Length: 352
Ligand SMILES: O=c1ccc(O)c[nH]1
Image (cartoon, rainbow, N blue to C red; front, side, top):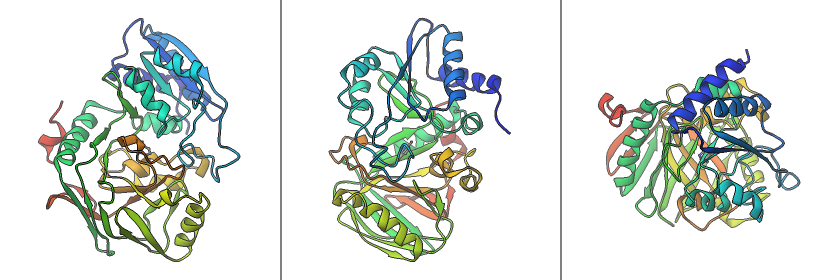
């Protein structure tokens, strides 16, 4: 069943309150052709009800003629803001930007954040947004995990299917995604609930074996046959398997960009209200698959850009791969064991 306008307005009010929206602040809602009308209308109503000055900035979409997918996270690098000084100026002047279009992995996003503007991405279907309204408990759990990840020098991931890969850490910060933007200059994504970082340049090596049921994004498919990735010096050097591997290889080759094969972010899911099984419940184009990225105990790794972390790689190809049943260890200490998060109740509420 759809979610009611009333439910979604209440959800927006909770998220905007957690994001410390104050009376008289300026909110700019960034939209494009794929923006969901109910998400837009309820966002504006909620922000107005909280006494904000609310603008809407609607921009024409880009890359539609280049990308093999309309998923807003599939083809990156340029956005409708690229080179658009007037639009960027408006967003820099705003206290809070509600991104209903997707700026993620764009240089413009960083320029706007540096001005102190907060940016909250929200492009999942209204029902997914309403099911995963963020909470302070989400925040404390993710921040506790980020502290561990930020202090680690090596991540070692294994699985019974044969995954055995090591990532040297320390060059890039740990990033928390918990669904609201409560500090100046913060970016976050509603819904989320996971922690991620990037391995040191050239610092990834080993084997990743996708098992039946692991997920490919933006394909939004559950892998049927195993895929074996050989990782060396920070890049995937071989992608071996059956039809799923062929599909992934063909898609990545379409970018004709060696940087597409670089390891991108790595981390694990911490959102108890996200479910592995949800991907099959939505039409492929209706969702960008945040349940898959956030479900508790996943190991999420990706190929492609690292500009989100301050790196210089802005390849347009971005592949996210959430896995089940992995064991993730930081400097020898397990944080996830065969798909079960090992944080304690105390850590879950460390920041409450
Ligand atoms: O919220 C997100 C979404 C996609 C991604 O690759 C990272 N974080």
